[in-house]
Amino acid sequence: MINPKPRVRFAPSPTGYLHVGGLRTALYNYLFAKNKGGEIILRIEDTDRSRYVEGAVENLIETLNWSGIKFDEGPETGGDYGPYFQSERLDFYHKYADELISKGKAYRCFCSPERLQKLREEQQKLKLPQIKYDKHCLNLTEEEVEAKLSAGEKYVVRLNVQPGQIVKIDDVIRGTVEFNTDNIDDQILIKSDGFPTYHLANVVDDHLMKITHVIRGEEWLSSTPKHILLYEFLGWEKPVFAHLPLLLNPDKSKLSKRQGDVAVEDYRKKGYLKEALINFVALLGWNAGDDQEFYQMDELIEKFSLERVNKAGAVFNIEKLNWLNGEHIRHKSVDELLPMLKEELKNSKYAENQYSDDYLKSVIEAMHERITFVRDIIEKSFYFFERPQNYDEKIVKKRWKEDTPGLLEKLMEEFGKLENPSKEDFEKAMRGLAESLGIGVGKLIHPVRLALSGVGQGPGIFDLIHILGKEETIERIKIALSKIKHSQEEN
Ligand code: GLU
Image (tube, rainbow, N blue to C red; front, side, top):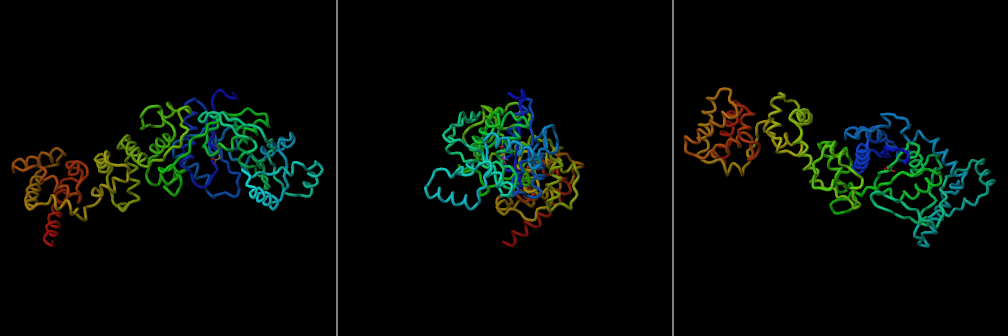
């Protein structure tokens, strides 16, 4: 092996956003490298000029940084094997294309788009299994090539694939996969605009950057025989290949935008924690051989191995992601969640309101066990941020009885007597009153919850009362008494 420590790469083409499949590829490369004390490189494959998207690279790097995957080398970090943008490495590709031409392993093709189109149509008519270039330009003499070059004719460089041979790939995940070169076209290596295609640039860079393991999505498997031929023609040692299983929708079709979000940025915007997304994506095709589902990055690094990556497609199950998000929230401390809640508040209708950190922390504490997203604190328990405007009619019907107003008057009287009450003081007062009246404490708890929150469920009632405080609690009970009585009179 070229290098005792693995060197792997994530080599995205900047399309405008980071696909969750891309995040999984980046993550598996990262976990594999860090598990083995190796290095991971970020290389931007930006040679397809027709797909250039303004701001795509910046966005990609920003999203990767957010995810917590750290690259040892790349556009931001630098390194000894740069530049890390393929568009800045054109000389390398030309050098090796020329070498292949001089060895007879590649050739210049001057065919016009019209000729190629005709060829394609003829082959389609014959229903050939594989549309292939007919090697027409391989028969040009050196003089003919020279003449065309001096006349400034446009050309591409093609790989000279010998038919009738078997190319074998030993894939860590898929085992041995064989391809017959009869089915491999004379792949274009350099386009007429002088830019390399993915195949040439990818192989040249993996070699020059001393990549030991190529870990990428299964959709690249069919390109791999062409890469193997390039390694052989250039006399280079091949890396180890590992092709990751496809990501599938719940109906087992290939993961698509139509059935949900595919951009990591979308999940981020929706409020998923990076820890949850990383945990979720790690399980799309890998498990440690047990039932464990909750992981932090450190433990993933410790446990990850390519040998435990599955061949079968991995189903993208959003319920599991939601569950993991809740779990990761519960593993965060109240102090960690505080800035997140503040951020959510800034983007909510309560942006103008002022809340003390202590107040917000006690709200987080009360809701910690009950949320899937941080913003649920605002949406599910809005009553910590404003007085209820309405009272759930079903709960009113069920809990607001004829004797309720009288009981609540007595309760307000008891609460009024308390000085600087703790949560326990409220509880004692309420339970004491119920006992002295010989009623179940539920006759107080449910109407009070309704009065304070407008709804029938939420955090523990004494948390609710204590967080809102004595004055606000009494005020809200008073408002409920006037409003709910009122609505009953109207009925
Ligand atoms: N540029 C390719 C992509 O966008 C890289 C594939 C590979 O890893 O070889 O995914």
